[in-house]
Image: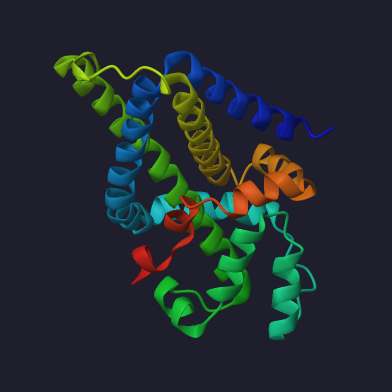
Length: 231
């Protein structure tokens, strides 16, 4: 049994049942806070990521780690060979698609690279940086919203709704669980250059359920969109 899939199921079920226990109002407030934190993060992170990627020392460190886990032997010089190489990488489909779609002359110029090997390392490095910045900013935004809600005592002022409160809370808890798993996927993306990240991606790729969750992660569109930080 894929233990990562089991963990994902436990998290989603746990959030779902907690939503039922807490009821609709409290669960939706928590979910809404999470969404606000994600929205703020998605708005700010491209600007911060671009600044970080312009730091030569940081890019060099991340690039070296990424290059250390990739084997560029016998790639071939044709486009088909490069696509085949990308398809064999131990990465989820969404990251492979990003590598294939951005393998163009314009991107090479924007990245200041002149060969396929440097392009692959540079692209993965930028995705890792995007993910790392996203997680850090999300954590800051979450703490800020938590402090604000406690200070204003917002939740105590919300009206109490009975009847469907727990049933609706069940659904809201499930949605919250999915969002938390998506955030977890971004954490794994930030760990792409590590052995832990590589082993997690192998587990994701061997499970149709995990692959579907990762590759349909709406939050990853902000992480893998190189245009926001390159052009």
